Length: 224
Image (cartoon, rainbow, N blue to C red):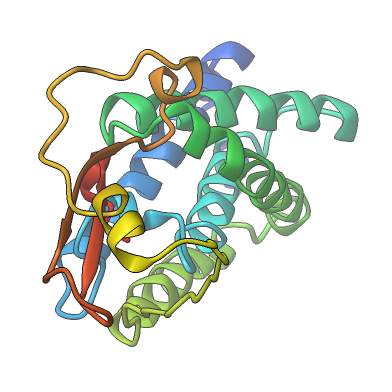
């Protein structure tokens, strides 16, 4: 007895598959980032995402997920670079809107984000090419466990930076110029601060004596 041929299913247009891969890939990346922030010992703030593993694994996973949706598309390697660019721009837009990342921070992180996203797309292009690509879906839970698991061992690190400037003056002449100042209410007018670079807002110290603790506070909660 012959087996009846399978009923053909209509394929999505290329642009729908491309858009679906971009959206779902970034949604998975965002879900992982949220999961990391909620784990004990995970990231305390979404702005701390510019560290391992988020800067490496999450863009890589976004690329792999997108490649799964694009596995049936006839895309050349050169076009894959362009696909990665569009997906990358969606990621930047979400980071700016949802995470409120500044332009300067995004520009600094952009090269690594794009490279690892592209790596995920190109690897997924090879990984899901064969007929048993459904079996290879196990890579997704494994990568998710790796990303979430690593964050459990993440610890905030603090470092002490020492700098010295020789000023040929007596302490009573110098101290009035290095004391604490109250919060600055006016917004910054320098262009690099307007596009996202953290700017100073207030300075405190523990007293007017040698060895007193001093804190320089910047926007976005940064303290030096």
